[in-house]
Amino acid sequence: MARSTAKKNAFYAQSGGVTAVINASACGVIETARKHKDKIGKVFAGRNGIIGALTEDLIDTSKESARAIAALRHTPSGAFGSCRYKMKSLEANKREYERLIEVFEAHNIGYFFYNGGGDSADTCLKVSQLSKKMGYPIQAIHVPKTVDNDLPITDNCPGFGSVAKYIAVSTREASFDVASMAKTSTKIFVLEVMGRHAGWIAAAGAMASTEDCELPIVVLFPEVTFSQTKFLAAVRDKVKRFGYCSVVVSEGVRDRSGKFLADQGLKDAFGHAQLGGVAPVIASLIRDKLGYKYHWAVADYLQRAARHIASKTDVEQAYAMGKAAVELALAGKNSVMPTIVRTSNSPYRWKVGEARLARVANVEKMMPKGFISKDGFGITRKCREYLEPLMRGEDYPPYGKDGLPKYVQLKNIAVNKKLSEFKLK
Image (cartoon, rainbow, N blue to C red; front, side, top):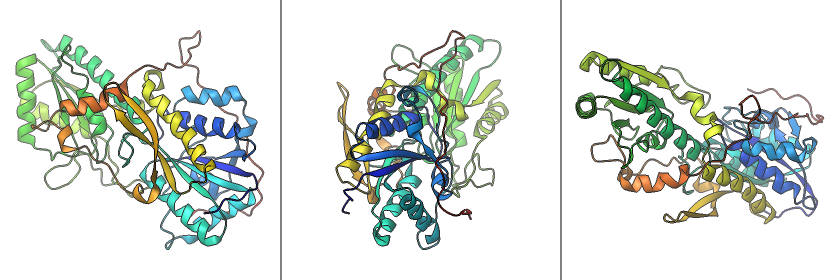
């Protein structure tokens, strides 16, 4: 699509579950746009994601100081607010997409940067398609983000490396705790982690055990059908050998009938099964069948908000994806997503690539079979080689005298509205 020579404003929004480093991508977008004031006007952010665009609730990021924007790089979660709001197909709800174009036109917006996962890539693609049909040019660039690490084409997703590091560290520390108590008390620790269909985060739990620090860990992947008999045998064997066992279970584990072990019978805003609570299910099974005393925990928001222990690799890549998104737009690209391309494992090297959104939208990347051990309860060396660089390095936030990390809270000043009110369906 031909791009107008007139200077246009940009729109940026965060979507879905936030991460420890999504604000680093926001920082990359805004700082890079500010360096190109001759081509990009202001960067407006959507308050609470795409909802901000639909309701014309825009935030003027130009009101924030350079220091505040820079601080986004070490601040977790979504500084502008996110949302779980899935826009329907163009055919089912064309009016919403037309509303986006109307808002963009009213505020002279020619660049659309949408920071999220697979559903966000789909929205970004549709905005690009509709803008072409309506004759109002919008360069739609998707900025990758997801703790689940399930976006295709890109080697990995910003947000995942930090979750992996948090889960690996937590599993190791909890295993040390259980080991110290196992003789007379708790023998089992169960940690529930995120991952509906892809077991990337669960795999990170296995990274806690290494050649120089062997720990008894059993991992339950969404990709492996749960077998009660095999699972209990694996736990029993670990306890017999080590005296205790840690279990890392993905929320998306299913039984032979295909039902989630943690299915509550509810649906989230995207129409997905509302999961949660598989840890107590697994813990109770161990107690009832093996008689071991246990403790369980759900990592939940902690795993994706833990900026204090973020991976340096992850922070750098998250920022790079935001920066690359703006550069792709300035190069005239449209309907694409910057990607992470791994060029070497040892030493670890990567570069920025790009992918067409038509190849990204609504496609999930599962754990390769070659990454899961033959017994289905662990990871292979190939998986370790993939995961280790993504967890590598520390990028600590600044700390105050009170011992707490210093995170930025933006002013988030609203842009004056120009259109009539729009009600979401």
